[in-house]
Image (cartoon, rainbow, N blue to C red; front, side, top):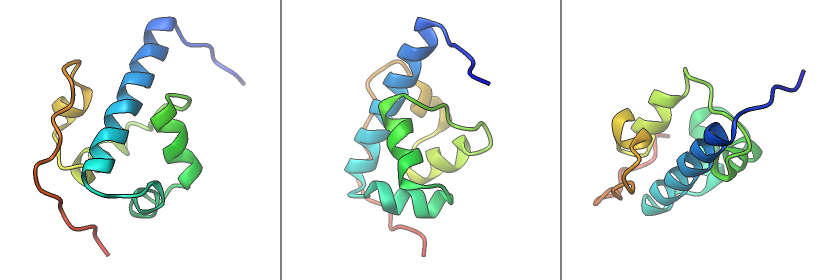
Length: 91
């Protein structure tokens, strides 16, 4: 079943994906590393970053923690502040 979304929702997903990309790269993290930590595929991370797929709500706190930001910062309409120091990836 395909559910259409509004242009506003699509724009939000694209902006969120761009923020995730910037924050992930600021941590020197690859899509594959992020996917492994979050237990999703690299293609899922790629789709999130491109704004083609919604992130499941239960995963959002893990994404924010991994990127060293709060949920407020992740969703902020302001340009995402890049994490100043890299946090090590969990093993």
